[in-house]
Image (cartoon, rainbow, N blue to C red; front, side):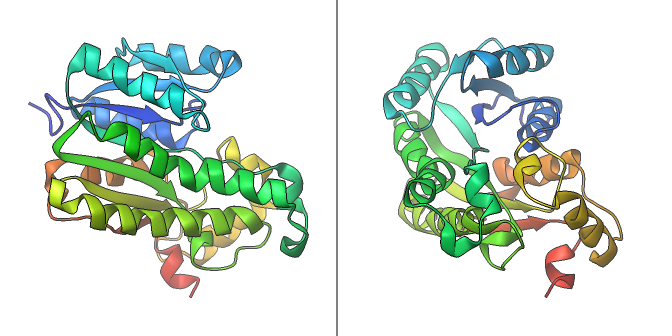
Length: 255
């Protein structure tokens, strides 16, 4: 019997086998969880479906998190097939590449709205859609980064979006605690992902993180996945509203 045996939930945000969300999925699967997956469009479905099926997934659904009707449809299908669910993983973020390249003061209004909508508000709307299906004792976990609390070169509007995401975690945790539902975030150190490719000088950031971290190395997908597993499992039954850092200690050393 694994830590998550008998538990069912959904992961939003797997893009390929380098995704942080994929590291989470692998750890949850190894612990015995049954997982549903979503994908944004047909191009991403071609990457996501084989990965999901390799872990035995039978529920793989389209979902644009900017379209609440599509999110409602996802949770309706989960309820139809499973009844109540135990966890939700929100691993969604996006900002226009142009807005990441510009000085922060030159961020476009549309770009600012887009980054906040996809990267932060989607957690709020996803939680709202999930509530009728999440059972008491359920857990919601999202993915953040150090740029939410400190300035990180070239992170720009995404840092502001992550700050909004972390604040949303605290407000949602305060609201849902009486329902027995926990909301937390994992703030991962820099990892080579599809999203990270849009950040200028990302390789330099990897080198700095490795040099400054007390562990003197970068963290892995698996390590992020293990932290998410903890927050999604009953091991963290008394933890909510927390930002859980897993970055080799870089957030401490960077101070």
